[in-house]
Length: 183
Figure 1 (cartoon, one colour):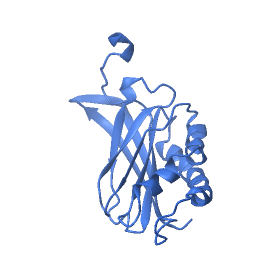
Figure 2: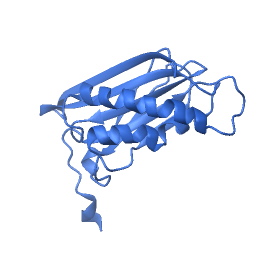
Figure 3: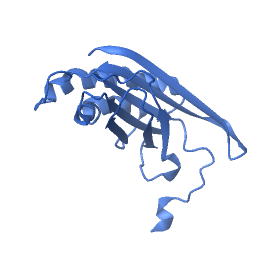
Figure 4: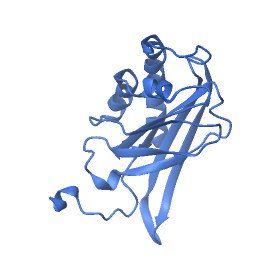
């Protein structure tokens, strides 16, 4: 696995809707910009060797970093893969839609639900939203949110941006009724 760089973003929201948020609502994102392991090889029918080589290492690298950046227990989480223009969406999906990647984050966050995800092919600097859901109950509406991020110089055509996102709480000032009220 060839990593060009790792980027960490944190955000603390102190006010929402004209009201204070106390404690501030914190989110964190850690992104790795890596060389696409299938770049320049044409159509690769069997992605498994690349998945086995890269996905576990990425999960092991990113999961503790995002939890540390958050600095609080994780309540909501998500993942992303943005593939450079010379790659396929399937290349990003291959790396993040495997337990070899996601289980590192599940263990670090004491989570049980599936990680929501975004994956697409895009040029460097593209803005993308990483969806988040509650770590143990995906029906908890207050934790349905997204984090907008971008890497100014990535992904380059032969790269993939792979990321994990975490929130220490639901949306600031969340007021939607529980899903069970609509049944």
